Image (cartoon, one colour):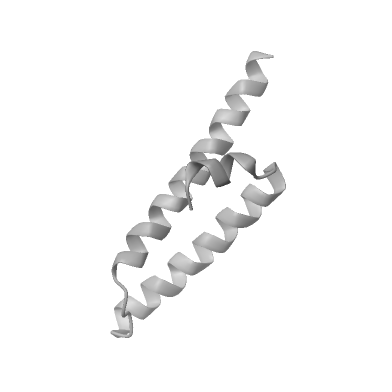
Length: 67
């Protein structure tokens, strides 16, 4: 997921995306602990995607405060 895709999402879509990514992160963590994780790089990607989404949410909130 890139920043352009994230900027095009609505606030509701962003919230849903963050929730979905957090669920995926939890599942990856469980897989890692049980030795079933095949793509270890996916954990890092998911973590960064969550950060990108939350950064956009914060930027939108700051933009709304300025108006």
